[in-house]
Length: 259
Ligand code: IPE
Image (cartoon, rainbow, N blue to C red):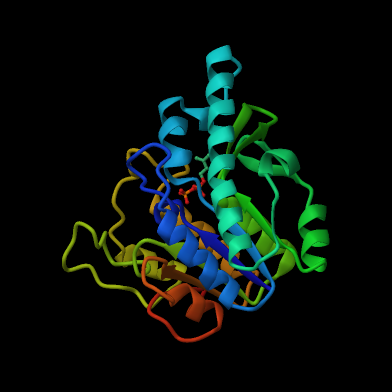
């Protein structure tokens, strides 16, 4: 079993509301299909989620009519992005089935309080490809909140113990600083918790409602505990995802819990 998260920054233009990168979505779908192995697919929300979720502070929940309206809007938006991903996977030859987190999972103050894994288990046992995504979900304390794709990666890694977990990003992996702003940033080919002090994380971005890069990397360490290999690779480079799924050595960052 292989577990893949397609990051929202690869699937969408993160700065423009609800703007899909259709060519990238189609190519990545073909690369996933080319892996020819049982897959669980998670994807992020990109500009279908973060922009409005941030504007309305949906991660804090709430019980007003305006908040509910915004939560429903974002839920419908991420579902629309999921539709594009699922369609592309089907066109690429995979029997992709959407499993919306809002239907199977609830949080308690941001932490998972219950998740029904039955649809994942049963669909994958019938050789379907379950597809789930960052979503607005119920939260016992906050009313509703945001469940990131990364949190779903952790739950699925725990339950399925896949051989490989892959985070598909818009950069080659984890760098010593943000490669988009620091020319001297160096790619880390491997990272473990004790390496973090050498990484200069930028402050959480203005639009990213599910947290900082550092928080995401810390979650990857947890995931690495449940899988044989955990990688961050660049989904904008053709065939890198395909090759990484096939177990070939590619440019990227291997994430491990370390000694
Ligand atoms: C975000 O999920 C979910 C919403 C904002 C509704 P992710 O945090 O996994 O999405 P990306 O990959 O950063 O876009």
